[in-house]
Image 1 (cartoon, rainbow over the protein chains, first blue to last red):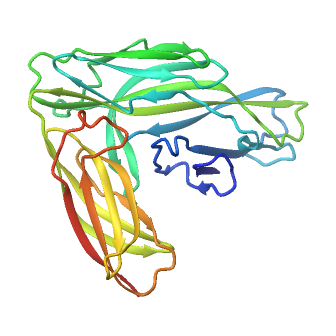
Image 2 (image 1 turned 135 degrees about the vertical axis):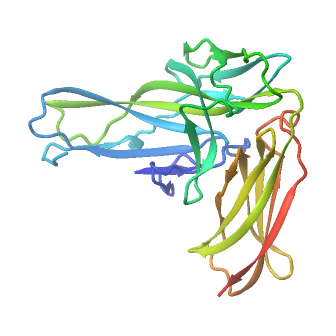
Image 3 (image 1 turned 180 degrees about the vertical axis):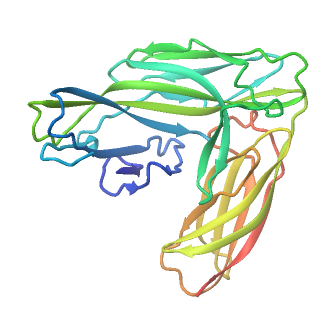
Length: 64
Length: 275
C-alpha cells in the first residue's frame, strides 16, 4: 500500500502501485513537500527462529 | 509465505517519520568542457545523521507501454551511447551528513580524448539511509522483532556539454480519451539535435467559447522517443465538443533558465468529443 499526498495527513492520499510508481510535482515553494505513506504486513511462520529481523524499504525518486 | 497466527502488521504511516532522506540542490547538474566540474549540495533536515552514498549510472527517462514515465537503465552502454557515467567522478562518494548540516559533493569529469561535440548524460544516485521506521500493530514481540530502515535514492540528471549543442522536439500523434473523471492525453515526442530536450508539457482543455476548463503542466525530459500519458481532471464534463491545446516549451520552474537549452515552443491541438 502506498499513498501520495501533498499534505501531512494520510487521509485523502492517492494510492498507487509501487511497482509502476507515480509522477508528482515537487514545489515550487507553495508545496515543497510530498508525503509518501507506506504500509505493509509481514507474516512470519510460527516456526520462525526467535530473534530480530530487519529489512530495508527503498524509495526511489527520479527527477526528469 | 504461509500466513499464521503470528502475523505482524506494519503501518509505517501511523507514526509519521518526517524528513527522511536529504534535501538536494540543484535537481540537475550541467557541466561543460571548460570547467569539467560541478557540485551538488546536500542538506540533512532530520534530527538524526544520514549516511549517504553517491554513484552513477547511464540511463534516461522513457515511457512504458502505459505511458508512465520510468528511468530506463542501460547497464552496458555501447560506444555510440552518449554515456558520461564512466568518466564522471564524485568526491566524496560516501559521507555522513550530521543533523541540520550541509555537505557539498564535487563532480569532476575526465572525458576520453577526442570526444565528439555533443551532450553526454549520466544519472547521479544519492542514496540516503536514515533511522528506523516505526513499526506498529505488532501483536506479539516476545519471539520475533522487526526492524525496518528507509533508504531514499534520489536520482538526478548530469549533463556534460562539449562544443555546439542544440535541442528540439517533435510532437506527433496527439490523442485523448475520457477515462472516469479525467481526460487522458497521449503524444509521441522525439528528441532532435545533439542534446536532451529538457522542458515542460502544458495541456489545456477549452470549451467552444475558448474558456479553459482544466489544465496541467508537468516537467518533461525527452532523450530519444517517448509516448507519455498525462491526465487532466475534468469531473463530470457535459456532452459536447471541446478542444485540447498542447504545447511543449523549454521553460522549467526548477532549473536556472541559463542552463536549459532554448528551443522554440511546439504546439498542437485536437478536438475532444464527450458523448
